[in-house]
Image (cartoon, rainbow, N blue to C red; front, side):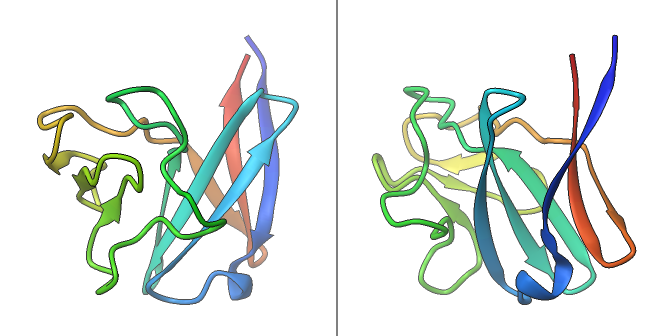
Length: 113
């Protein structure tokens, strides 16, 4: 099993309380990152309810007050820190967390094949 690092962005391109989406063609998936201060959370861009991308507008994964991740299709709400669905049709399910690292100010997703 091999591990691949996928460059996502410079951390400075992901402001606090924001989100960005990314395609990982080599891994065949889409992911998104959310920043909370010094912490970054990366999840697969896939609603656990119907297995479609979460956003309608590019890079917009958060509620208007930036407190939760929201599925634009069904309104499901997810905790940023855990990916756990706290309201909506997938209540009790979770987003798939993606391993990641920050190296020299750059954010990388880590996938295993």
